[in-house]
Image 1 (cartoon, rainbow, N blue to C red):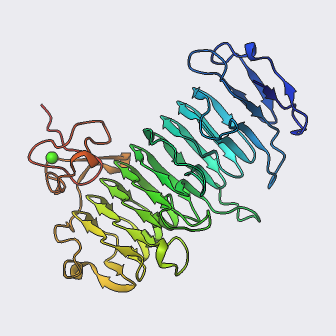
Image 2: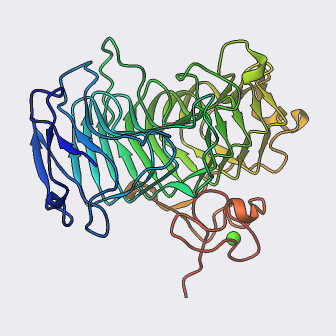
Image 3: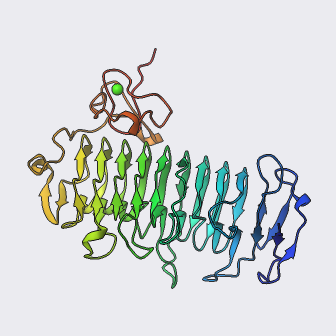
Length: 401
Ligand SMILES: [Ca+2]
């Protein structure tokens, strides 16, 4: 069980570090360039596999600050918990290639590439602060073609903040986004997160994706619920690409300046196999945005059985693109969308202080669709529904007692 640490400046010259070096959180500390990394498992024992801490290299280098790599079969690996760490890096931050990983209460910052790049059996990211990332804050790739399917374990990204991306416009920078779930990523939930003050080149959130080459079923049964997207600039807030049964429900999008809020495209050009099957956009608040082309855009032939309804859409323009054709907001019901939508202001409690809870007279109250287990609670953890039904947006109205 080699446990290695690379001396700063030379990632090819790994020196062995004895396993007993890790006996508890914060007990192994390695200075690397500007940053420091603390590594420990939750029970204080060393992980059962190999850890490498590599030098960062520099802009465009392939070095990663921290890599958890696989046993030979590539499927099972250690159960690693990173808890309360500050991780600052140059290229990728955490590069996880196997096992089960929990990243909790960490601050990850300053990557040229991804802050957290994961392809593993289970990933849980909770209560973390991601900022100043040059590609993705979190990039999750599913199993690659030819490998046996991994067991579906609960996987989620919950309660995190994503803010202040870094759009460098430099060679080699593939695209800035906060969370990208692609390459067959399956059965993940992104919830109770705040995406704020970001300039992106690839949307804030990608369900499916094209950057892994673009294939059918890029994202499968992914759910984004009870999130807030505020002050996002770039082409999109949310991209569906090659998705299957992916859901964008009970979110708030506000104060964004984008080409399209939701873009539903093929994962690869005109390839019909990479369309989106049954994309769902339900019970969101899309309020007070500046939209260049369309609020929701579905490319021609890019989706089958799309569901878009029960959204509050106001002060964000009136134009949609459905199956490649421009459609005005009021004409959506004739196209099978938004028969139950609302076009009035949501009447938030104190939006200037980023308090987006509905007030007692808000039209969102009990106006959403019953979402059942898809959205069982709200951003505060309050069970849904309260009162007579599901509320639209990330918060359920709870009357003051
Ligand atoms: Ca309600």
